[in-house]
Image (cartoon, rainbow, N blue to C red; front, side, top):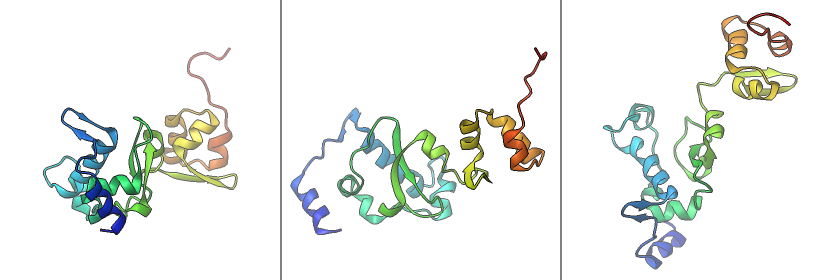
Length: 160
């Protein structure tokens, strides 16, 4: 543990984030990050600890985690790994919204088109095409991106 972290711990006997019945979002995120990495009885352990994903020992201390990551910016944010194959370490973590985390899933299908690469959800949102329609065009039907992204969507029911 670095001197700065040790000093922060020594200066605070209580950090004020884990009062019984009133744990802060920052504290709950720290706790939730550690559980699936450390406890085989936790739901989802096979995707974290079971795959060898660990939390840096520095973050065994909530105070060090708080010092490194800062406060959770909003109730809509939680801790996210930039590279899902790497560990929970400072250089690989950020506070992110659910939407940002959804765009960072390893199961996302990325598509290159018009000199850019995004996942299907991002393209669907940008182009105003239903996600399921775009997914079906690209993945199920194997359409080329140019066709999938530019062909008008036929509306169900009668044509006007």
